[in-house]
Image 1 (tube, helix red, strand yellow):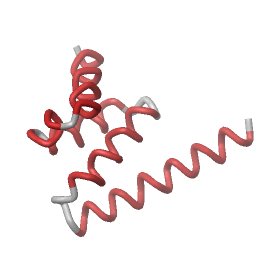
Image 2 (image 1 turned 135 degrees about the vertical axis):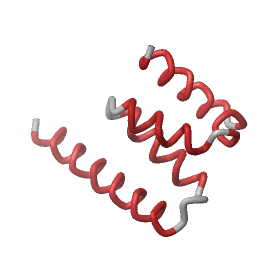
Image 3 (image 1 turned 180 degrees about the vertical axis):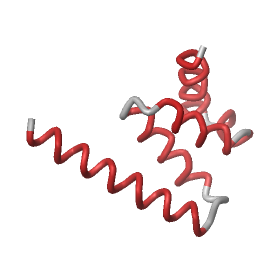
Image 4 (image 1 turned 120 degrees about the vertical axis):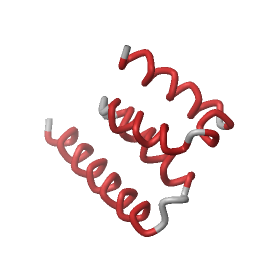
Length: 77
Protein backbone atom coordinates (compact mmCIF):
# COMPACT_ATOMS: atom_id res chain seq x y z
CA UNK A 1 0.00 0.00 0.00
CA UNK A 2 2.83 2.40 0.78
CA UNK A 3 4.25 2.38 -2.79
CA UNK A 4 0.77 3.28 -4.04
CA UNK A 5 0.58 6.14 -1.54
CA UNK A 6 3.97 7.39 -2.73
CA UNK A 7 2.74 7.22 -6.30
CA UNK A 8 -0.39 9.14 -5.38
CA UNK A 9 1.68 11.77 -3.60
CA UNK A 10 3.99 12.04 -6.59
CA UNK A 11 1.05 12.39 -8.99
CA UNK A 12 -0.49 15.05 -6.76
CA UNK A 13 2.81 16.93 -6.73
CA UNK A 14 3.07 16.75 -10.52
CA UNK A 15 -0.53 18.01 -10.85
CA UNK A 16 0.33 20.92 -8.59
CA UNK A 17 3.38 21.80 -10.69
CA UNK A 18 1.38 21.62 -13.92
CA UNK A 19 -1.35 23.82 -12.41
CA UNK A 20 1.25 26.40 -11.36
CA UNK A 21 2.77 26.41 -14.85
CA UNK A 22 -0.70 26.97 -16.33
CA UNK A 23 -1.35 29.83 -13.92
CA UNK A 24 1.74 31.54 -15.30
CA UNK A 25 1.17 30.56 -18.94
CA UNK A 26 -2.39 29.34 -19.68
CA UNK A 27 -1.52 28.86 -23.35
CA UNK A 28 0.76 25.88 -22.70
CA UNK A 29 -1.26 23.23 -24.53
CA UNK A 30 1.44 20.61 -23.91
CA UNK A 31 1.21 21.03 -20.13
CA UNK A 32 -2.59 21.18 -20.23
CA UNK A 33 -2.66 17.92 -22.19
CA UNK A 34 -0.31 16.23 -19.73
CA UNK A 35 -2.43 17.45 -16.82
CA UNK A 36 -5.60 16.12 -18.49
CA UNK A 37 -3.97 12.72 -19.00
CA UNK A 38 -2.79 12.62 -15.41
CA UNK A 39 -6.22 13.55 -14.07
CA UNK A 40 -7.84 10.87 -16.24
CA UNK A 41 -5.39 8.21 -15.02
CA UNK A 42 -6.33 9.11 -11.47
CA UNK A 43 -10.03 8.83 -12.24
CA UNK A 44 -10.59 12.57 -11.90
CA UNK A 45 -12.62 12.79 -15.08
CA UNK A 46 -14.27 16.14 -14.33
CA UNK A 47 -10.85 17.73 -13.93
CA UNK A 48 -9.56 15.99 -17.04
CA UNK A 49 -12.61 17.13 -18.99
CA UNK A 50 -12.10 20.73 -17.84
CA UNK A 51 -8.51 20.70 -19.10
CA UNK A 52 -9.50 19.10 -22.40
CA UNK A 53 -12.35 21.57 -22.86
CA UNK A 54 -9.84 24.39 -22.37
CA UNK A 55 -7.73 22.91 -25.18
CA UNK A 56 -10.67 22.70 -27.62
CA UNK A 57 -9.13 22.53 -31.10
CA UNK A 58 -5.79 21.25 -29.83
CA UNK A 59 -7.49 18.26 -28.19
CA UNK A 60 -9.08 17.15 -31.43
CA UNK A 61 -5.80 17.52 -33.35
CA UNK A 62 -4.04 15.02 -31.05
CA UNK A 63 -5.58 11.53 -31.44
CA UNK A 64 -4.77 10.53 -27.86
CA UNK A 65 -6.34 13.70 -26.45
CA UNK A 66 -9.34 13.33 -28.77
CA UNK A 67 -9.83 9.78 -27.45
CA UNK A 68 -9.48 10.98 -23.87
CA UNK A 69 -12.02 13.72 -24.55
CA UNK A 70 -14.44 11.07 -25.84
CA UNK A 71 -13.89 8.94 -22.75
CA UNK A 72 -14.64 11.93 -20.54
CA UNK A 73 -17.80 12.80 -22.51
CA UNK A 74 -18.97 9.20 -22.25
CA UNK A 75 -18.27 9.04 -18.52
CA UNK A 76 -20.14 12.28 -17.91
CA UNK A 77 -23.13 10.94 -19.83
